Image (cartoon, rainbow, N blue to C red):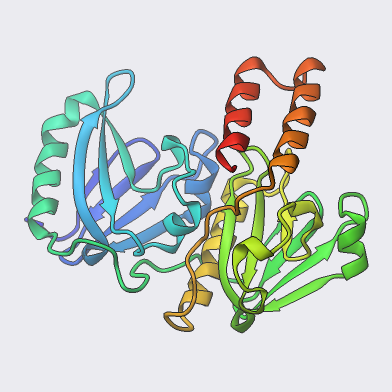
Amino acid sequence: MSRMGDVLAGFHAAWEFESDSVLIRYERGMRTPKLLSALGERRIPLTALSGVTLTPGKRGTVVLRAEPRPGADPLMEAAAGQLKDGCDPYRLVLPAEREVLAEYYAEELRARLTASGPAERFLVPAPETPLQFKAYDAKASFDGRTVRFRWFWTGASSAKWKAGDQSFPVAELSGVEWRSPELFEGHLRLLRRDGGDTAEQPAQADQDPATVVFGLGYGPVHESLPFAAAVLAAVRSRGPAAAVAAASPRRDPSEVAERIRHLGELHQAGLVTDEEFSVKKAELLSEL
C-alpha cells in the first residue's frame, strides 16, 4: 500500500494494510455477528487473495470484499459456501460516502495481488486450539491432535451410545464435513482414512459415531465452524493425501422420501413455515 499501517474502518471491522498482508480486526459487541467476534482478528497474506471487489450494499452502504483463493483459508474451505453475507469474514461494509476512499484502497490492493488459482496449502492461519462446543447429542473437543465426542444421554441415539464415547487422532482422519446449523440437518462429520469413500459411511448423522448433530442452540456457527476449520487444517498439514471438506453423500431415494414426509408433518403442525418447507424440501431433493 502507499503507507504501511493505513487503516480502513467499517461496520463491525477494520482493515489495516501492510506490505504483504491485510490485518482484519473484528469488533466485539452485541451487533457484531458472533462468528466475527469469535475470530477476533485475522492476518490475511496477500498471496491468499485472488482479487478485490467493491459493490453497492444495503441502505446507503458499499461493500469492499477481498476474494480468497480456493484452498487458501481453512475457515472458508470448511464453510463450503454456507456462510451468510453478514458472517463473511472477507467483507467490509462502509457508509456510501466513503466509496471513493474504498475504491482507492481496492485499487491499491489489486495492484499488489500476484497469485491466482487454487492454493497448494493453507495460507491463512487456522483458529487456535484447544476448541470445544456443545452439539445436540455430544460435547466435541479438539486439542490439536485428537478430536473427542462425549455423548449426551438426552440427545445421542442408541447407536452412538452403543459405540461409546469417541476419540479420533488427526492421523486417522482424511477430512471434515461441516453442514451449517442454520440449514436442515446441520452436523459435523469426521471423514476417516480407514472408512474408505464418504458414501460408505452412514448417511444419517444421528446414527454415525463419527458425527455430531446440531440443533436449536447447539453447534452454533461461531463455535462449530472454527472447530471444523482447525480440524481440517490439522488434517491437511499431514500431507497432500488429506481431503478438504467434502460434500454430503448421495442419499437413498427411500430415505429422502421419508425425511420429506417428516418435514411435511412439521409443516402441517406449524413448526416449519411455507418458505422453510420449500427450501428444505429442495435441499433434500438435490441430494438424490
